[in-house]
Length: 173
Length: 432
Image 1 (spheres, each protein chain N blue to C red):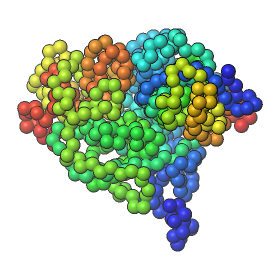
Image 2 (image 1 turned 135 degrees about the horizontal axis):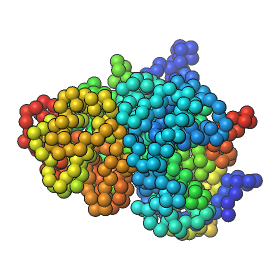
Image 3 (image 1 turned 90 degrees about the vertical axis):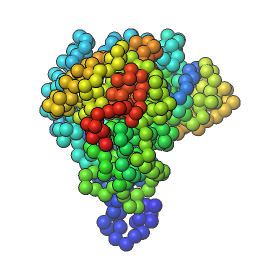
Image 4 (image 1 turned 120 degrees about the vertical axis):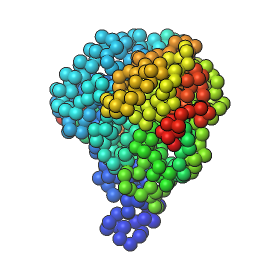
């Protein structure tokens, strides 16, 4: 379903629909900050959709309305989504730090105005990250996402900042 | 715009005058070593100061160790402040902090402020670790606070911090700028917090997302450093990358700079504002929620834990008792604030009124410890976020207001308008 080899970074997966202003406190509540990963993952997006953390499957796609990821700089917010297997995040708009953090972790996150009204919960969505193209309902609707700038795409292709640092340390960059 | 500037005689030789750029454009141009930046372009910029706190310092430094980065680009630019989980409330937090202490020695970071020194942003400003015109990053979203001294501060995550420490640089998109022109002077019992809550309502993330907010106009001259910090601090709540004030001595308006929007605010016309659950942009006049019963009142945080904030609360509460069945938690923003407040008798007055005074730190603001909410409980705090689940139970309710509103509400046991208090003259002196 997913792949970043050959034809660029493309995904096809089941959508989980969320409303506006999904905060990092919902994605990664502060009270569990030093708890073990399995505890922290159980509470991801709990206040918005309590069933999400237990029912999300690898390759699923998070779709949200405006200002997704607002709040804290905590990188655990996109990290938890990645750890749960979320392939890509699409939102009418993304909060700035969340957008940067997602890419830094190798999790594609695209700002795609109108996506939250075009996508129905649990339907299949296709995403071409590099082209900034989102296809909904077997071609029924094609949406344009804001293109991820080249320096960030470069980080994304490498799998995030950590592989980039490892390459730097090894003198390969 | 840029072409026009470059057409002017002499502009090719000397570059455009600095005032033809917004504060954000100027700071990024300076950090990127170029004469000019334009909104929308990407620059690789040299970072002036980098700040980490106890939640993320270990993660950042561990990533450096894991990836084989042997030394920091420039350890003297890094500062570490332990402020969130302090003193360690669990073995896990203690272990996490012990790991960070070891790693910051390993990476030769000398600027380390232990538990009790205070909240990172307050400490950075008190210790002179941020300078006007400089680009600053921190592993905390409220790094926008440094805009109060004219530094372009923004929050980043742990991975990007690791990269910044290793290379000294990071890429940035040059933001568009929204200008806020302040006029007049704040009225009795109306504070900088009420202004920034009003801006949440008036500007908000719909307009400020990814942008820089710049404050200018004669009204900025009436605002103290503490007040500017409150306002810049919450810039991030409207999605802003930076929230900038003119540096000391700089003109309060830049001629020729290009702004995508301008808002003019008459400070004198503002009234106490309250953000209601569960979003910071749900802001109403205090009167609309007055009378709502409270379980907890919180006075503190990097938004409102400074001496002026404690002073106005103490002036309201001195010689009185907070309402029965309301608990009031106070966390001074730093050891310096704590000592000054103690010296002025403020801490004793707050304690005598029935408040609990905790050590300097982030306390309950980020939902870590020291005053979380149970399901169904309602809190009014002077902090910066009221998202569902921010302060403990997702079924708790958080209201945000000024220190004056917090103190008045603690007295009443319900949300109250501080202007309606029958207060001693002393409170009036502090509040005007």
